Image 1 (cartoon, rainbow, N blue to C red):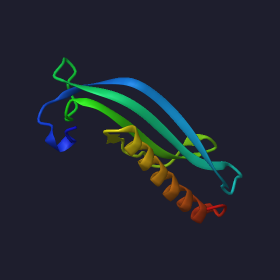
Image 2 (cartoon, rainbow, N blue to C red; image 1 turned 90 degrees about the vertical axis):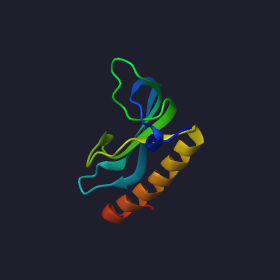
Image 3 (cartoon, rainbow, N blue to C red; image 1 turned 180 degrees about the vertical axis):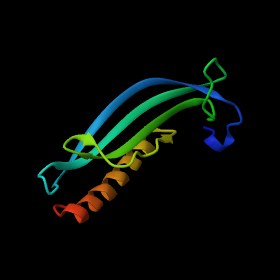
Image 4 (cartoon, rainbow, N blue to C red; image 1 turned 30 degrees about the vertical axis):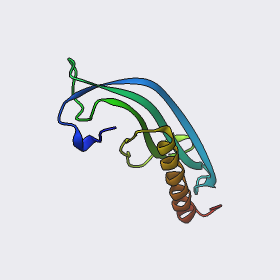
Length: 114
């Protein structure tokens, strides 16, 4: 699959599937709100041309993920970029790595299990 840098054509994006995961780290803040992460999973097709061709990405199917901090089950903090992957396995590996780092950051900030 071509990468974003290879794309010299504008594409239109169509969402095929969308799902959410909420992860609780078993950590609470000073107000006793649970701390965790919210993961947005999407599968999208990018098609060359089209009336709404905006994206500069090579045509094809991408597995996308957006990760963010959660407090009390809702996102908080700075928004994070969406990452695009060629396979679901690559996306799952990225999610595992993100959750490991996020759990460690939150444990350091609020105390609790690592």
